Image (cartoon, rainbow, N blue to C red; front, side, top):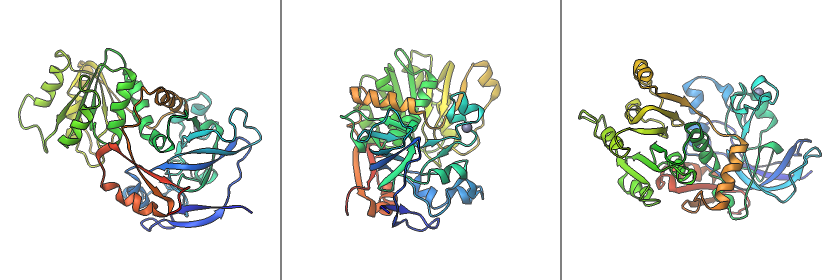
Length: 378
Ligand SMILES: [Zn+2]
């Protein structure tokens, strides 16, 4: 029997260990992918220490142990199931980890992200059954996945850069809901972080005319503005409430949009950010403006429903993206309109996976791209 190496978590809070396990065989509709790079998301350190389990006492959301994590794998198709028609061995791909049941009302109507059993392969989710069916995350030499989950990568898009597609896709699906495009203004709340930088790069690619961004680190904000100084403007937020009325940040956003306020706002704030930081960004919306939240504010918002109604404000949540949206991003990256080369990759071998996860605290905002490469010996 052929075998492979996988980094496995045997207990929450303990380091992953490299284990030799049987090589999986793809089922008829599945593919086997040799992993070349897998992105590490900043939240992973909290997940493997069972942050969610301790918050909600609900272990059902976590994969059964031992578990193989790794949310954003890229690699080369090594084998295809006998029912797979349009994917060939040797093709370069990103594996969208979004798994669904495939047969509920939402799945049957093509709205797979709304499946009640929505589950992230290699992370956590709503169905133990799906986690058992697809137990291979990207911190392994090989994974199996449904052929329908593959995003084909253009030759000029590296495996390392494509390992960031999860964050790009999270922002992209939200920005499509906002109708980001030519003539439109967008505020990215938290523009220099992992998610916010992706939103800024996508807004440039999607043709947004005016991109406003907030952050706390002035040097990082300057680097974001330098991506397109004539289209991006940034505002450094201080700690605590604005202190003065009217809020100078809201006044700045209105001044940048001929007094109207922004057409759309995407909230990309990190875990631990206060509700007040999101409320201030909502105040920058024009009448009829819309906001989508993909950030991690957990405090309850003091939201005035009467204000929402009278100002015709929209507020929606969004999670992840479809494989079709992944294909659109891959096409933009291939054409060069989505600028992936600004990312600086920090690549670790599989043997250093625990150090790589722990080392994410030290990063250059969203510019540093943390990747594990299972093909590299240590
Ligand atoms: Zn379903």
